[in-house]
Image (cartoon, rainbow, N blue to C red; front, side, top):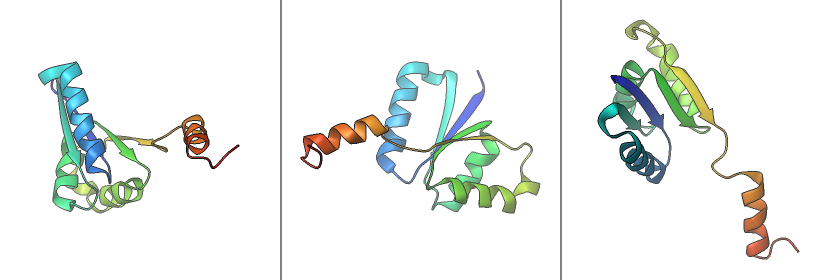
Amino acid sequence: TGSCVGIVSISPGILRAAEVISHSMRGNELLLMTANPDVGSRLIALLRAASHVICDSPSLPVIEHTLRQNRTQLMRMPQIHCAQKYLSDSTIEELRKEIGLLE
């Protein structure tokens, strides 16, 4: 209990899905904060509260910059975990086959 995880993504759909999945699996046991990288005040609040932050690759440079700019305001630095891709290579290949880009 008392654990806070942050998720930062450029996709509002991903953020909402993460909230629903997290709540259905962990309930109130885990505090989940979400932020779009373009909303600076929300991102700073998330970085202050979360011990771990999961992000997509487009959000990573914004998070790193925000951490550097606000280092003195943070009690501890959160651990950042970046998901490089939304879809695996095999999934992309299957989609290409389905839409006729590959024979």
